Length: 199
Image (cartoon, rainbow, N blue to C red; front, side, top):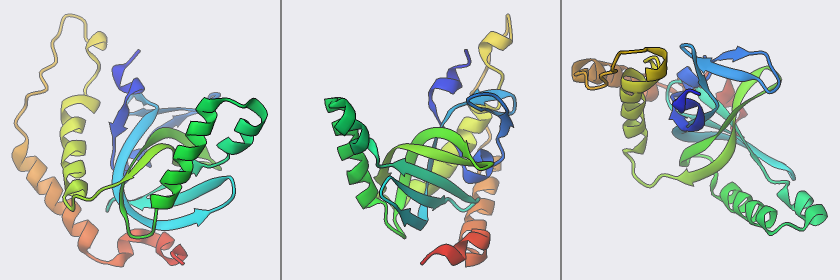
């Protein structure tokens, strides 16, 4: 099993939304041939829709908008099951739904799923970032991890070879970060057609 399949892979929206979907039950997702099941992203909440059973929101990281869904219907399961673990999950989900507000910078981790043909993150946890540099640091992490880990074949796939993740790519990282920063700050147009849903 590929080790990155069991961790929350730090991805930008453009990378997450371009994952390859393999039809199966449940669907499998790959990035450059490597299976990915969980993701972590950082961005601004630009849309929020609260219902009884779920909170659906969009996270914009400057490269695109990631649909996220936080399920709130754990209390229905608790009523039938009586499990204290489900009660705790329901309480945590309600607290997390309260902190997801328009304009907040959040870090989201969860399972990659597909709904009506669109990729989304089914939220495991979400926290508000207080550090104004968190988004830029996430961009740098994504670039670094992409080059040093995610884009490489796993060691098991390369018999007899040793992977060397210590390559100097600081100049390229600086150029890529500059492009990301320009795209993020250029205009509200980077939200695409989704910006008009921010009511």
